[in-house]
Length: 569
Image (cartoon, rainbow, N blue to C red; front, top):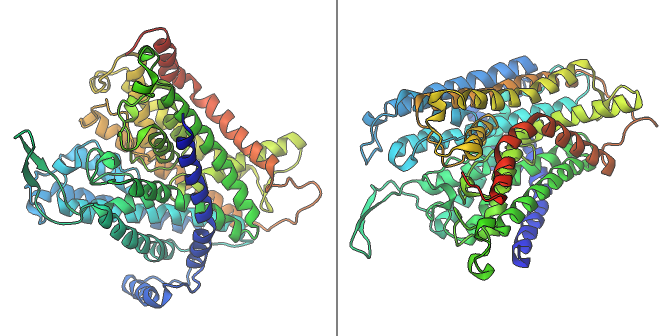
């Protein structure tokens, strides 16, 4: 570890903190329907979209109606994206004449992109046409991100409203998010990306002759437009197989900084929105602090692990080896690679600048744990905040048990329904992660896809289902997942991780919105200070440890111990 590396991490933390409040304030005004700087241009377009679709922006929805609208919209998106992939050979903007995508891969990819996972079992530049990349994948990068943010707003309204029967309007929330938040940022930053060297064209791939006299086919296309939304919307699906390690996706140090800021920006801003809407910004900063502490713990562990290097290569001079550089871009180095890997798995992004399969065992465990916890550390757009608030409900229930008092949060009594729904949503994740992993490591179709034996092979399988269920999309690269068994089961895991968690969460939002706000009293537990932050962090770590420690012991932990005993896998 170096001072320069720590300074880069510190700079990132400062910039993110400075960005949180202004972006949170702007988004609060957007979702409240208040006038913003962009209103003169976008408000007429917004009204036109409502008239065209028959939506009344003044009419709000019960949580059940909100959930049905979200599910119907997601299903329609799945059907359209599946059709685009299956028909791509006869559709335009296919200069490489790519074949139709196979049924199982089209199913996997469609579920992946409507759930904001963007898991890719394929090589994008040799599988998907420009039309599928633009009209299919990029469009769903916007829509799945807007859906997640809308769902978070519904839960925030549950805490902030009193005696209300509605939690907002899904169509209005999604439209405003896309028009006023996602599109403007993506247009501006997309132009910056083009300036920095990211391609944005519809040209055919280029045949070149290398300096050695060999032939190489260089893929290009509409990259910049997809690159920005994949980061800002925490989607993560790369235009190229190498993802953000590819120089066409991430060519400079500036683009790398922009990308990691984009990944966390909305997740951080939502904590500020929460504080503003409940009438106390300190509440939002308390949630921010919980996320920040867990983030710092993760990046410190990962940086320490990778900077320490491989003990089996310890005989090499330190100035020659300098840590574990396997699977990393020299232009980013260990510090930035560790920072990016932590950020992308704290959020449900999944974009990578280094290969997680090449991380040291404990280093590889950090991204895995980040996702196992529900990617609540700033997290995906929307999903990070509502996942964290589910843990807050559990933490306040624990606090109520300790003092013999009915738990409450933001003046709302947390009764049996809210606690049961919160636990149901939280437990859905390990059910999918551990259940599918157990199946994959005992049957031949699952085992055949693993390229490593022993604990590292187990980690490959575990990471895949953790990533799919957590809607992250990154992977241990040794897994050959583009086969029917893995495409089908990973698709089911993505579906469970997204929608089976959302329904209980929306039920909580509806229940809380209908309750009156109870005035604070001398016995009210303060939720804007250090004691609250420590309680929530403790509940998250204890819950995660009890559920996932046995599986981690079978994978990265035993691999770490074996490595120090001189055995590799």
